[in-house]
Image (tube, rainbow, N blue to C red; front, top):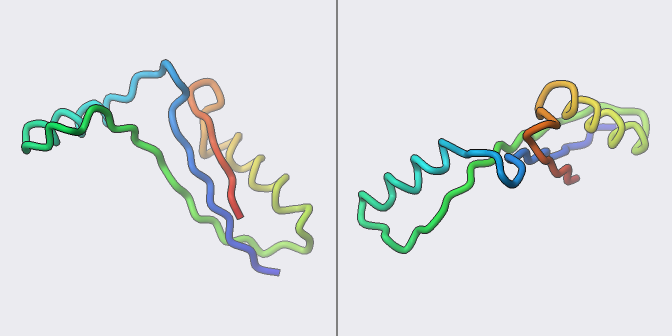
Length: 80
C-alpha cells in the first residue's frame, strides 16, 4: 500500500532562527513594514510503500528522529 506523509520541522521556542530574522529584515527593507517576524520551517513529503497503517507512524517517527530533525532544537509534526 502506498501512503504519502508530510513531516514539518521547525525550531523550538527559544532557539535562534537566523534565516527567519534575515527574511524579516529583507522584507522590511523592501517596504513590507507590517511584517514583524518570520519563522522558517522545513516540510518533507514522503511516499511510503508499507504493508499496514501501523507501520507508517512508527517508520516516519523513526526517520524523523534519526535523520530529519534534531530533537534537541527541533519540534516536528507528522500529517497524513
